Length: 197
Ligand code: SF4
Image (cartoon, rainbow, N blue to C red; front, side, top):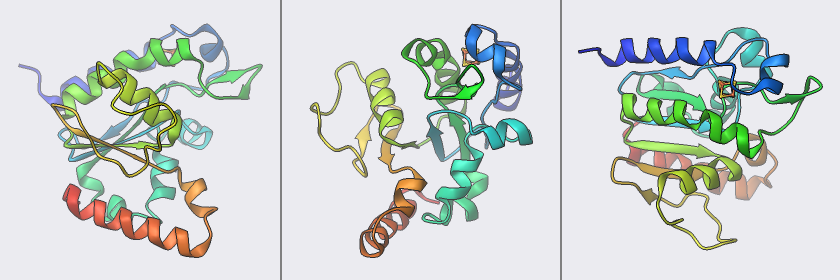
């Protein structure tokens, strides 16, 4: 039977060869698969690949993960337990200007993330940013586990297979006033310990 590393290699080849989203394929330098431990403790999911990762040949979400590690150092020290990826695997662009992914692109790409979850069996999924969290929770729960407008950050949502924790994007953390930033950082450090990083 194919092991997790082989399955991830095959998935990477599928992502690299994918041409479903015409507009994204027209402007991408490459599709940007995720990467990390094949049986990770924590999967970090961001909305879309950064251009810097697309250009630099790095896994999708790496730039965000690096920025997040300034507030959650265990993501760096425990990097061997982490898998990082994105909801869409290509940088979304129109006229070659970077934009947010459209609903149809998120839907078209979700099966790749679903496979990554099945293969790597994380205990925790960190959903980075509001849009990522809301999309993931809608996809992974039959009924949305939150009321419209309810804040999601730092809540723990139990899925039968893993726990999903929405957290702020690093740029939003950096913009917080010093006291609020320290409080949020303390919560992230405590979360790291709970997750076993
Ligand atoms: S975003 Fe996903 S589904 Fe769309 S072309 Fe890229 S890899 Fe394929």
